[in-house]
Structure formats: structure tokens, C-alpha cells
Amino acid sequence: MPTATETKMERLSVLVEKPIPLEFDVGNLCAFDSNPLDPILYAEDREKCLQEAARDGAQALINQILTQVPLKSTNDGVYAELPAPVTPLPREKPIPKPKDPTKWELFAAKKGIKDKQKDGKLVYDEEKGEWVPKWGYKGKNKDGEGDWIVEVDEKKQKAGTEEVDPRSASREERKERIKKNERQMKKNEKRSVTGAKPWAPKKGSGVGKRR
Amino acid sequence: MIRTVKPRNARSKRALDDRGAKLIENQKKTLLLSGTSTSELTRHALGDLHALKKPHAIKFTKKNDIHPFEDASAFEFFSSKNDTAHIVFASHSKKRPHNITFARTFDHKILDMLELGIDETTFRPLESFKNPKFAVGMKPMICFTGSLFDSTPEYKLVKSVFLDFFRGETINAVDVEGLQYMINVSAAEPSDRETTPVVHLRVHLIKTRKSGQKLPRVEVEEIGPRMDFRVRRIQEADAGMMKEALKKPRQLEARTKKNIETDIIGDKLGRIHTGKQDLNKMQSRKMKGLKRGPTDDEEMTLVDAEDDKVKKARLS
Image (cartoon, rainbow over all chains, first blue to last red):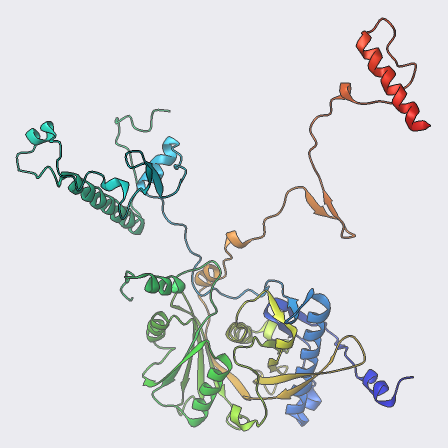
């Protein structure tokens, strides 16, 4: 048998009835009530009028959330899974543009060259009989840089007029390759900023004709 | 334009990347500024808006000689320096007393501006309501009451700016316990006497009571601030800029899955490709009449005889 307090509780209405049904943007936890405020009450007791409108809006929005949105109960509490917001609101910043392809990427795409499969940083060194890093500390690319004796490449020795220490030549070559790569990176960056045509083959050069 | 800085370490690079354009954006931050002359009321209002927006707001204390509707370049500078897309500017003059300007930026350029005058007779700051407030950083519920917000350009802008300003973070799930407070923006209907009605901003704490039904009974309690605004000057967004700002990234669009449909009842229907059926290998019903005659291959008859045995065994 229901007690007096229970029956009283049952009388509390949870429905919001308005001539124009409210619109909701549950993703933003937002309700839009296009019904006019009660003009008589607004003139007499403005705060009461606004309070009542607010209560109705709150009740309607909470009803909408509790009935129309999937609820998930976890150990932390009950969660309402909100849909994406629907009201169009401006972004803060423009949509990020995809990075411009580098000169090499364009060339590779044209020639149909696929990226090499990455197979880790380590490579097997047959002389040492163990796995060593390809680059970096004790990297494979530094092979022969600390050698006591270096075989002199006669051709290069003849071609270059200035004296080059044959023992440091290998290291200098590597450093030169790094610098070249940096130059290319800078060029690509500059090209993406200025928007210059990235790669135009010269007429009659035959590049791009082969298929 | 601020010079582009190249990050020197990973931490500063992360910080710089966080400021850059993103597919899923951060919550817009707010910068609160004061003009050269402010009233006590506007200072209170600015502080209260700061309290509502914490922790995603920065408030500056120094005076700034800015006249937004004449030259808003200072706003753009502040926006790019502090990475704030909302700017709230307080000023007070004889011509426009108790003035609050809301400005939005897109890509650190002014998108639109809305100038509101606070009614000094009805204003009540946050502290004047002596009751418990909501926890910092909660996502508010927002309610707009009045048909004006869908019809008149000024009020449409009010709705857009306030919704953008108060909505907080975009989240995909909310704790039901976390629905703590509601921001109500309402306006009466325009009449002959009053063509541009006051916009009322009220903030209420939500209290739920058992109703004996599944849904709770909701009651509200005002926690302040209480502000009544009159719309003064507005600067609407440039159409091209707004179009750019409203663009939705294609990467975030839900991909339609091929061959999967949902019918009216809500059942999921799928269509699959099964390949071509080879009718020659199909097992048809076994009958004595269809059996190969004695002229056929001996092996086949043997197999068939075995099959028959199996069948008989199953039947028995």
C-alpha cells in the first residue's frame, strides 16, 4: 500500500508539455525552446517567469538525455553516450591541409616506385657476426671511418687537385650526404610555402615519356 | 603576424603542434580584457564570466586602449599570442555604459563581434548568491528560450556566440551525475513598445528529486551571475570566412559501409557475394532411378553402394 509521501511523489510531473515541441542538440547538451515566455507572468514577476522557463527547459533536456540517448552504467557511474553536435558552429582554425609531396615523392609516384618495406634498425654484420644498428652509435654506415690503414682510391686522388686525407674521406662523404639531404628538405619546404611548380621536366629531355 | 618559430626541442614542438590546425580541435579558449575605462559592474561581470569559463579562460588585468568596432587588430594580436578564439572585452563610457563585447576569431582573424550592454538595475554578481556552486570545468547544459533566437540576425548571433562560448568541450559521453548546472538564455517576444527585447542570462544549479517514475523531477536553483543584456552594435561574419569556418573535415565523416542496410523495422540487412555456383557438383536427392547403370565406372558403383549402406545404417 502506498504511503502518503509516495503518492505525493507520484504527483510530481516529469513531463513538459509545450505548444511547440522543443528542439535539442544533445551533443552540445543544448535545448532550444521557441515558445514565447508567458507575457503576463513576465510583466508581473520576471524572475519567476524565467525560473519556470528554465525548469521546463532543464526537465525536457534531462528527459531527452535519459530516454533518447544510450546509457552505459560502469563502476564509476552512469554515462550517457552523446551523439555528435548538430548545431553548426565555426571552427577555431582552418582544417589542416595535407603535407605537400616532396620532389622525390612526386618522382616516385610518376615512376611507380614503391616505398621500401621498413625492416627495423638492425642489420646483420657478417664480419663481426652480430646484429648492429644501421646508423647512429656504432652504426653500420660508419664502417671504415676509424680504420688505421685506408686503401687509397687512385682515381679520386688524381682527379682532386687539393690534398684530401684519405683516412677522413669516408667520414666527409657521409657528412656531405647529410648536408645534401638537408638542402633538399629546405628546398621542399620552400616550394610548399611559395607554391612553385614542384617538378617540371624540360622539353625534349625524354623524362616522363618512358612508360 | 608573429614570426614563425622553429621548435628547438620536443616539448616546445608538442606545444606548438597543439596550437596548430587540427582535425579534432581543442576547446576554444577565452581571453578576458578590460578597456581604458571600466565600471565596477563590468569588472564584476568579467570576473563572473571568467569563473564560468575556468579553466579555459585567461584574464588580463591591465587596461587596453581598444575600440573593437573601429579597429579590432589588437584583438587579432591578442588572439594569436594567447591562442584564444573567444575574446570578451569590458568597457564603460557615457555613450555605452556597462559594455561587454564578445568577439570570435577564426585563424586568429576577427570572425564576428557582438556588443552587449548590461542592465545595471538587474545585474547581480556571482558572489551575491550565497549557495553552493558547481564544480570547476563541468560541461553545462544550455537552454535558449524565445522564438527570436531563430529569426532576427542580432539574436541569432547572440545564440551562436553564447552557445559557442559556454558549450565547453565536445565529448562523446557524459556522466549523468555531471549534469550539474544549466545556462539559460532567454528573450521575451518583441512588441510594439519594445522591438528589441532584453536578453536574460541566468545560471541555475540542477536538483533532481524522485518522482515515483523512472525519470526524476528536476528543480532549479539560481546560482548567478544574473545579467540582462541589450544588444548594441554587431559585426557579422564575412560570408566567405564563415563558410570556411563551418567546413567539416571529410576525414571525420562516417564512411557508408557498402551492402549493409537497415530496414524500416530496424533489422540489419547485408548483401554478400557468394561466387558462381557449380551445378555439376551439386548434391541432388539420391534416388535409385538416378543411379548409374552397370555400364558406368566400377569405382563409382562401389562408392554409391557404400553410400547406400550408410544411409540404411542411419535409417535403422
